Image (cartoon, rainbow, N blue to C red; front, top):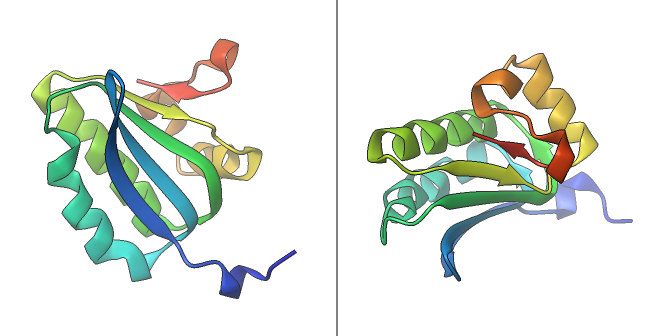
Amino acid sequence: MPSYASLPGSVTVEPHGSVTLVRLRGEIDISLRDQASSALPRLLDPRLPVEVDLAEVRLLSATGLSFLVQCKDACTRAGLSCVLRGVPAHVAVVLAAAELTAYLGDDDRHGRVSS
């Protein structure tokens, strides 16, 4: 198993069928601040519902939490849904500790957090 230090993070935004897919991978920390900021405007074009895939997140720092809140806020302002999917247990713990689970929504029936 690779060490956390060897797992760079990434934020990608791409159309995926009828949704805009935002994929977070690796360590989502301060080193990705600029990448995350540049991803935000691309969320809303082409005005499709947004799904944020967290399945490959190894670490979610305050920067990552801020990005998730900014995604939710941008989608709400644009009248779009924002759904978190593939939320690993360790990320769910961070969301709960930050008291963001209720804000982002929680849908255990589908194994994902949604809004």
